[in-house]
Length: 105
Image 1 (cartoon, rainbow, N blue to C red):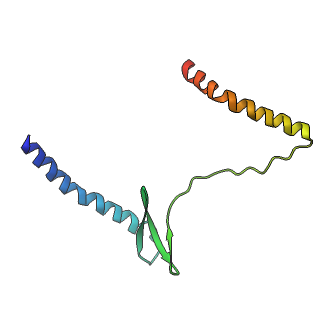
Image 2: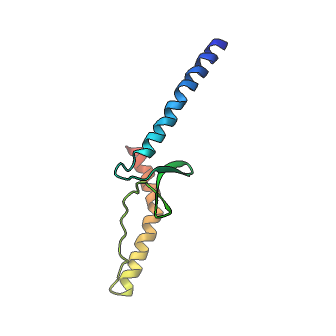
């Protein structure tokens, strides 16, 4: 048992520097056309590569696309009340519909 622990610690200590070197490679080669050095920014729980541009540190990261809809314009008060009731009813019944769909499928 003691031998197994020694072997596993040896393997762990041998492989740990390779993981650290891979992170450094990723940060250094994020922007190949840039002449300036790239340094990491530590934002919990991730580490992002960063570039210093005109004295400011700018993090290099990818953001997911999102859709922003324009506000709804109703023709009259009756339409707005009907839409509000529809939203209320959907918010009440949607969790039950999801649960039933999970049971059926």
